[in-house]
Amino acid sequence: MDNIRVLNAYINQWPVGALKDTNGVWSFEYAQSWVREGFPLSPALPLQTEILIDGSTYRQVQNFFDNLLPEETARRLMAADAGIDVADRFGLIEYYGAESAGAITLLSGDEAPIQNCELQLLDLDMLSARIKQLPKAALTKGAPKRMSLAGAQHKLAICFESETSVLNEPIGETASTHILKPDHNDTVNYPHSVMNEWFVMKLAGLAGLGVPSVHYLHVPEAVYLIERFDRSLENGVLIRNHILDGCQMLMLPPGSKYRDCTVENLIKLGSMCNEPAVTRKKLFNWLVFNFLTGNGGAHLKNLSFFAVADGYILAPHYDLLNTSCYGTSNQWMREKMVTALDDVGIYQEVTLKTLLDVATQMKVGAAKNIEKDLRAMCQKVMKGAESLYKELDDVNEEQSDLMKLTPGEFRQLRSIIYGPIKEACEIGG
Image 1 (cartoon, rainbow, N blue to C red):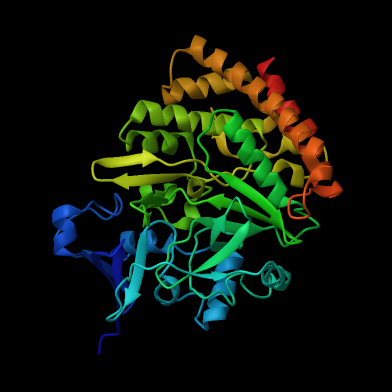
Image 2 (spheres, helix red, strand yellow):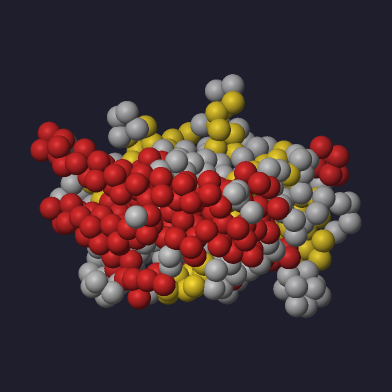
């Protein structure tokens, strides 16, 4: 007798299709109405009336939906909270599918999405208590809504009022507005990750990269909040927008996020978008910014793309932080980069010519113009980092406890600015 499990997929109350697990083989069938008026969920799931069925070696359906789940420790904790085997991917999606990365809502049986707006206040003491339980329990433990957010870090989908710093948790089908992340739980080896990420994200905006609005609070534990760019307000209603990460775009499993983050694949991603030349330039700038800020952990799941009726558009950047400061003291230039630049895989071997050669490979413009842009970005990053630090320092004594930085956080920022950032920016002369 066949063992069959079925989940219905929706985007903003619209039925998209049915996800099915039959004896361990996954398949997806688009709803007829979605075939007529919708768009493909990914390049791996073309819009068609025929059922898409995984093969024995190539599992395009499972890979796509598996990318919606968190990774590593976060997945294990969520599986434990749900009482589900961590290897049961379909079971995890079934349990947590009401709120995932992007727009897709996955519901079982006769359930149907309801357009509502119910919120539950998240008291700061309660949030602090949940953070103290990490990594023994998931950050979502005790939340009124089951949710699945891709990535390796502990996260919580939240509704945040930036003017009042009020945090609410969404209930039922209510969409979240922000993603909240606490400091890395290994504070000895990865201290002050919240302020690190907030600072580098703000710096990215100053350097000209497209980034969402970001915030930080101390509850008293530090938490980082990033506005969800996969949400938009239309006629007073919060709409979910469908996005794909780099692995989903390239039809890769999440485990390939580091290995396959190559210049060649970035070029391929650019060619898949509506404005290939513009997108390649943005991806090149992302590569350069990661080098200048010592972000050695950037990978394919750190890139997202909006799926629209006529193609794909690169989304704002996220998960930008300095990882080099967590390596051996003063040895960051000897570390390997995730994405080799013109076959150069170690920071200290990268030169201005290296970056110019990558620009040529990615076809982002004339060498003379690119060199000028690179030197300008080096100046923007270094001056922006010093200016942003001064701004924080000047107002810190006047800040409330929610916003006041600790001496340790300031010390961490100085080590980032006058270590990896300063050394890398010297490449621009």
